[in-house]
Image (spheres, rainbow, N blue to C red):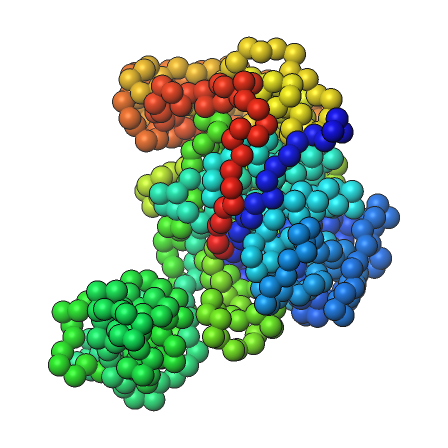
Length: 628
């Protein structure tokens, strides 16, 4: 039918899942000084537990006049002046054990991300005065594409300011195939920034959610870690990252998983040594501490007392051990990008650096659904209102909360201005601690305080994104699969993305070729009326970088100035990444943009070259899964 824009298979995506705010320098004084509750964060997730103290509406007035959303009240769900919208989406009307047919959260994930972004109280979020709008799109089986797109439409129509999406696909999708890319484009057009998690497929897996109009957030550590000690019978002690609140009175037998094979389940020591579910004989491990040959969550141990990983050489004939209660320690290496955070480069547009930023992710305390187990084991019968978990799902709401704070401070700013502010003011990460450099952390670690006053911003319009897509090989038909309107590609000329007004520089060079690239950018003054910025260049000696002009002078707020960056260098062969930065300084602000150079195979330089010849169904993928 003519009115149908495009058809995508309704595949399933998967979830990616507060010391952290103080760690970023965003303390209680900034929370107290932040502006009122007119900023609304929309969360596409597993729902929310409305009775949680984190979502109390004490002190909140009525929602802002612009608000159009409503609340679905099935199964005793109620909204308030904090949770001002709640709706669930299940287009196929399929529910499984554990699903609740309402916006209520039975998984815990949605409550946790919501509290990380906007909770009140001791376990506070980034912008506690922000309102929350809940769009439940994820269930036991996953998050359906049709539900995600419907939720985006509703969030835009309702009037949210920020959309937080801690889920994604593990497949490499073209922008017109990706529901989050499509939804976030429509949000951008309506003045709404979408933040998304980078994915949990690291360190070797590629990044999720890489559209240039959204903010892609990687995952890094904070300066607090939870540890516990295993003490052997001979006095040897092993320390590992762990959270436990139990006390073992005395020692217990220590057994190797390979000696507890579930023979009736056709397991042998070679397999049961890993302690995966179903591999262990529960009668052999009951009352013992189990030594496993792989990292696992412990759900395969049934009623055993723990899961440890130590050197077999330290075992003896009748081994015994005990596990001491957990404690906290300062992580002096923080922040570092965690191993599971997905890495760049951008698989679709090589000249757009992804991820954009990184944010806290390890052992994050947040609200939880009391009907969801606090661990991944379905045999866990404990109930808790708060939980500590890790995953790139946790980094995304940190960025959402920071973006809401920036929006509250600067209500008129566009999505690209907010995104630019978070990128150009980031805490600089140490590349010596992160082998993948910018492919791991993008522009570096978010700094909410600095982002509220960045000095200069890189603003990008909808028209610029459309021109970018056309240069990447889209024609009018494929372009409209994203825009959903009457947009056209006026030119079929292909080109690099060097002139998209992006707050970072990425230069992909064909293997064996000389380094050369010319970028054009425009910055908008959002600082003092009269200001002068001087460009600095921090790059390896092997590269020659020239900024023209090297000085930008402004006489009014809102004034725009353009500049170019030329990068030259010798022929390179299969170099993973050469990186540096170009900061603009006016004596008060430092507006820093990273610059990366890396090699690719010749066939990868224009990965979208054949887009205009493809039909809208030729490359559609099946279901995909990413866990948080």
